[in-house]
Image (cartoon, rainbow, N blue to C red; front, side, top):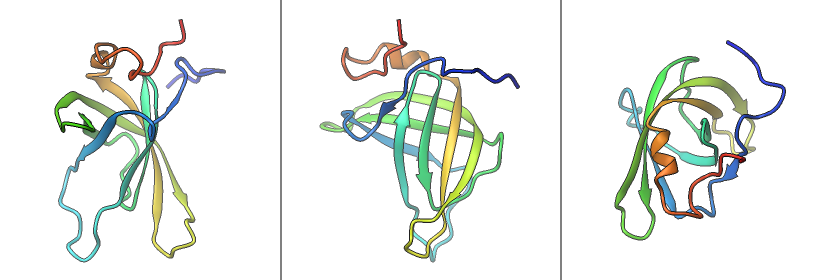
Length: 122
């Protein structure tokens, strides 16, 4: 694994984007605990999200981006978990910050409508 002194692509805060983040879980969540999921930021090479379920390092995950207004599918992207950090939310529930590095499907981000896709810094 190589490390870069600076980011390859700038991050974009996810909240103002016209997208919905939908994660495909590798296994069913426990019945006694509803899944909590929140995308935090995205770039052309990765995504950070918060979740009350822990994922293993290098675990492969797939997620979809949907158009907020219509629910229309925009992209399906796969990647591996490259960082997991426990976050104290103060609510007594374990929450994890999960960073993903994209393996496939990220090229579809460039095809999204102008102004909605994270820029590539050029």
